[in-house]
Length: 359
Image (tube, one colour):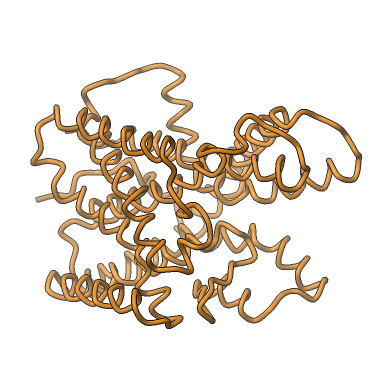
């Protein structure tokens, strides 16, 4: 297979778009009290599944790009690359909200800890960082830290860490502890699903990719038809049993989707400007994921202050377009230069445009 996984890059854009859509519906319905066709039923909160897709992709990317790496230098280099990729732009975009909270007297030590130290559990309920999507970055950083230790210590340490996590997850199902709520969170299973995809996809026949995608779509569809309980809300983060249900209802189909699209990478090619645009938006997906919250806050305030009346569906579409456009701008003019500055040269290859490791 070639050196790029463009299907995964496009999937990153889809995942970001799902999250943006869910929050755009929240703006129209919850904050502005408008009606939209996406309100009610399974579609209203289904966009939250974008985070689960991101987690599986992250596990796949990390396991693939670090294949064959071992030792202290490799582990330290991995952790530094992940830190500079995730944290600086996140903290920068958190600043407007942090300043507003500080001025309003609502910036608590717990919020600061979740935002800057990526530790979201001071108690038994999650404390969300200043920038809402940062909750998922707490789990990303947890996964990176564990994976970095596995690179340093080797395969035995890696398997020991997996065993320790599974033990803490099992304990968290019966014991209430802030540490277990975070370190033993069932949603971490989705990263491990991505690692599993990285380990097995080459061994499967190409037609297995089609089956995997079909099963993934069927799984998501069944959830939409029959419901998916409370897995889309905070209960999946604060209640381990609901979190385990989320890993099953959304994590497993996400894993199948990533597996299928990776295996189908060279089966169906759609060259042309549209595919290039989708890949570019995949490049910008992290910026979209972060900045869309600021766009939604600004649009909500603008609608409330001006009293402009608009159909709920128009508000949703406008919010999605504005969020995608803002994400593209931030990616080009903020994220990429910041990465270049912290790298000391040109940005590293995009995460999903992976090079096969040398045997």
